[in-house]
Image (cartoon, rainbow, N blue to C red; front, side, top):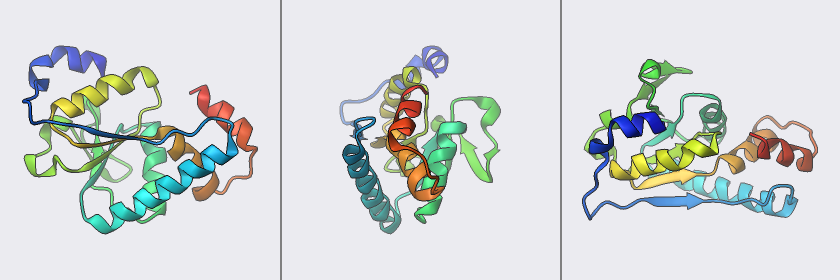
Length: 170
């Protein structure tokens, strides 16, 4: 992601009207009450998305994106595809089309983009990239999605504190 950005800086210049809305749902890792609150916020947002009709994309056609895909599918949210900077992934991922963010047309700039990035070091450069391309609904809550996946989607029985510690190691 950083390499892509560095090679294409000229494509990421923004005019003054561009803005980005980052919705960050934080759950204090290991704090069951905080994690449960994050899960409820995620579920509320997903219900709103389902009814809005605004396109939904997942950035990251890899493991982090897969978890987000499973949660969105579980809650009946229509996924319009994945976004990824890796040109080798620009075909399909789990039967969803994979697009380059540059190739998304102007009408989808209001799309909701969920960042399925597990590597925190890449998260900031991707947020900057998408904001510079005038996307306005960028959602960063991979930790909360992982929590929702394990407890609501897969219904795995595991210790919440141990899961939180494991997620923090990703």
